[in-house]
Length: 190
Image (cartoon, rainbow, N blue to C red):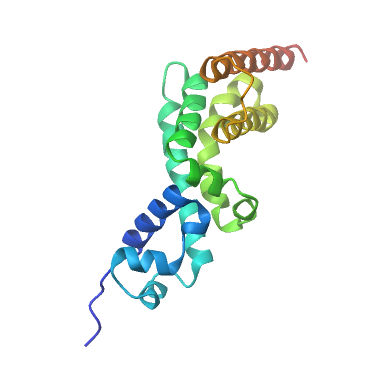
């Protein structure tokens, strides 16, 4: 008779995600997860072969969640602004997940390339008719670099010269919109 399952991969991921948000990547250990679930650590290996696989799963879940938010925002009247705000809001609501999914280790995982591409798809679909298919990825990368840099500086407390970071974010986004419109005009001229 097989043993009765005391937990599931989803439950493990939820607990691991909670530990990640509460204490950062170092707080996510198989022993801490098992303790929180009231089981022994070896039981976790039935669902995830090791900690790396679990961390990879957490990155996959985070990219999927971000992609869903961006896709939803893409249908807004001001899709450009809505997608950027969705990105920033995700990073602020789940800062440790955001930092983990954007970490050097996670960025090298080919296994999450498909969800990364799905998250970018609404942005590319929005930009292609504006700047042309050939420039859409370049402009999307510019936008992503701005968003990532900005939220990373916000999350680490790097904006220390005064002012209102939220208002500055909106103004920076308006400037980027001008760049996108300019790129579209240059595309039409050339």
